[in-house]
Length: 117
Image (cartoon, rainbow, N blue to C red):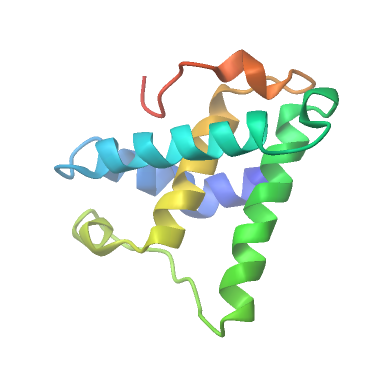
């Protein structure tokens, strides 16, 4: 699931974040929020592999989008990322975190990491 999300959204989005003014900072803010939610806000989170928590969180965001009758099209081109929705950036943060998280390791391994560092 995270591999597909990275292929569809992560690669283009993280490339865009490197050149779109302000996007990297917004992704970093979302990354910190997701990391905090999964390390502090999930009961028994320390006992579950971080990658499992991250996949569940990403699925929850996508379910939320569908429940509201929205469609998340993938922004094409760097300019389109200037208009990215909250959902796009939140899922992009998930992609950034998934690239740094080793399978089987807890989310606490990512404390202090930013999305693009």
